[in-house]
Image 1 (cartoon, rainbow, N blue to C red):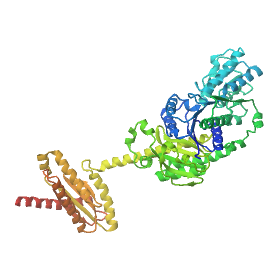
Image 2 (cartoon, helix red, strand yellow; image 1 turned 180 degrees about the horizontal axis):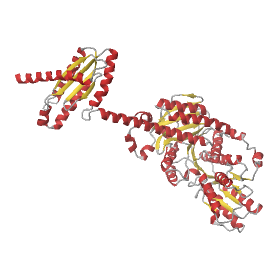
Image 3 (cartoon, rainbow, N blue to C red; image 1 turned 60 degrees about the horizontal axis):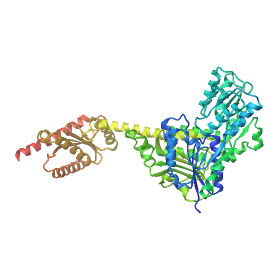
Image 4 (tube, rainbow, N blue to C red; image 1 turned 45 degrees about the horizontal axis):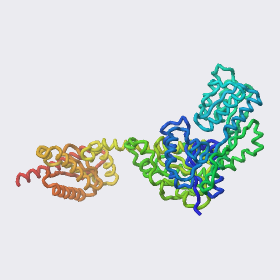
Length: 637
């Protein structure tokens, strides 16, 4: 039977809650023989525009209708511009959808009961501890969880006839910046110091704690600080901060269970709420539930010791990737790091032309591309690195809309695949896939690595672009713009190379001086446009018929051909080929000006003191003798 594939759209996989949700989905899916493909990005509410575009672009990769069902996390809607893009994308989805922590049309939604959790905490502070001066730090405005927590705060105050004081409310953000703002508000407030600071999540609570401690306050003696989510950092914090456990793992289980029932055609409740739990202190509740550090490994999350090893490998990766030159070197460094992480599978899938556009042919013209052009995924994805069960292997390109073709082959055990964008700002280069790996989950180091690898690609592109621009500029400096052959600057450069070769290998310097016959007359009779055509074609013919010599436009109608030769026969053979091509050219352009060239050449034995000008002088004299002969022959005829 065909294996089912569940797509998950989520952000902030570096946080404990999101990681636990995904692990719950994974357990349910694998227990039912389903793959999970999580399309993940990392952006916050302070995200810069271009970087956010590159991150959220990962949702544009898959055709979600290829999957059996989709789970959407509320975090993906935090930014207005992302919300609009994702809702437009979801309009095209016909397979079943379940949401976590948000509402999308009539799709079943699984919620953490944030209101009940915050209400129990507030009742504990107000009724059990008798507190009346409580400063509240809100989460992201408009976020469903944040608003539920805030509403519980307001309701408990009103029910206990405690005035709602706007100065005791800080608009936070779930991030460190929100915690810093709350601490400033408390310290600068003209109101009496609060008995408790109630934060909408642990990150802001820990930030407030750190600032107040530095300011000389004692916690919890002078002020009680509470958080929400009961994160890993909160559990390890001393003194322990009162928090509320969100049963994220159970939420993930419920979401996947509901989706599988929808896929199977069974009825599903529109809403399902998973209760939160208040953790009042000292870790007793933690031990009673057996949620100790050993559970971290059992849930597939990164332990502290494993994180230290990752830091070591990440530092080495960053050092090495900044010094890389060329695709092979870059690829080897990425492979070395992947081997150290040892995922079940890994794929670095890039857009068509990635190697050429980044490592070979990057040009200044690329800078004129629009954001839409940069963000587009190519029709096929090219896996330049493929790793499975301990070995690297070659993998053929496949349609990018499926994310990974092996998802739909139904072979082997069910797996959790995590897709992340490979980009720099809004420049999309492809995407990265980890399968059954702890590295991307609840691990901020994964974000650092993603940024490092994206930056390395852009640095290589710009390095290649700079080198190519320098080569182009150098070529413009040593090339004649009309004919494309070398000018005198080029002649001087390559004479030194030829001279060294002649001396080392005991070869002759083959030096020819050529002059276009009657160019002034051609310009006078046919015009300068025709004269330029004659000059261009002279340079072209001289260049096409040489094997390894350098052709130089020496002056207006004068050319120099220089190279190496074993004998005079080589020189004569060259000029015979040139004359035949000139004759063919004149026949093809009958009625136009006649192309005629006089030339003279010399074979010179060079020594370290031989100079270019003296060698040219000899060939120049021979050329003028040839020119006089032609004029004499014309007079006789």
